[in-house]
Image (cartoon, rainbow, N blue to C red; front, top):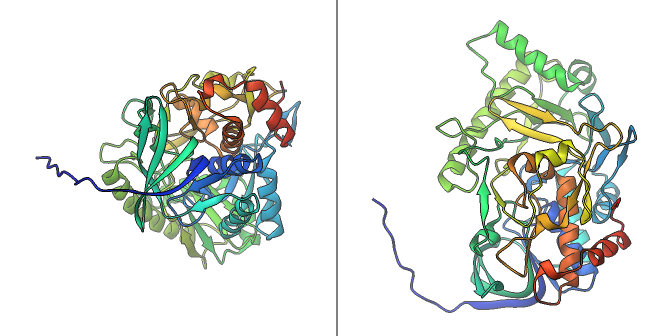
Length: 448
């Protein structure tokens, strides 16, 4: 039986008034808040952890994916703008690795130290005058017709109301949009979605031996197969397509191998509190089991130890708003170009399915990337709200590519830029050419 309690009405203090309020401090939120502030808007970023970086820090991802893509056969950086400032600060702190290629040279990532990322992100936002409210999350909204007037946040000091002219949902889960009544989809629409992963890092690896043994992506999966053949009752791996790679310090390696399911075998629902709680426990169980395999079966790891298990399970997909346009899998495969382009997505479809990972690359050999359209940031029901990051408007397949950090930086910078130009009315009325020109002036890459 479901029980309900009524909370008595109480007054809520107003925390402040801003031009722009950004919810969520991952790549999209970082880019959105910096772009809004550097273009003259009084900006607040609200983040429920005590640090920035989103899944890149809280989820232990430890690399930027989707910044690089193949143009005319050459792998080049295609995502620029705010991210360049962040990379520069990371490098200055000694926390940025050289580019690493994978998938037979079809992808390129930049790995980083998570502690350096946290510091670099703080520095970047403070440099541009962004106010930051940590340990707070969006709990409700107040609206006047089709406009949000205030967001209500839960903090250690109790509930607070924040007023703004424009709001940007970069929460990853579409929390603000859902509370504001925006239409959305969850996962693949069939009770599952992209499966989450609990990331972890190991230290004291013999780098020379390990690199010879598992320096290629495929090699670790060969070791897993051999271990299962030798010990069929001992090793049960959660998925194929494991990825283990060295960090800046080659004695430290990141491990991306777990896959978290619910009791029905579907992907854990990241917006269901009970499933998420059970998933955290299951993720750590899988980490311990896989670490036992690494030490026993993989050269170079016999004396390794676990440095860190990510603070939270790594969520790939939850809510996706149904905006003015939904990015599709066909857009990724077909290297789609849009007149209202706000930048480039250079990551392929990366579909974490049950027991494995399916990669789908663009078919073009000269333009192995696609544009991201302005329309995918615009919800239909709320006039002064934009949504950027993995919860932006896309199909299940389209989101599997655009959710990577490269695309999130692009969407966030566009959203923050648009919010700085927004004087009222509806975001649908804002001329996209004005947004594009400001983005180009701020270093972003728009090809059309």
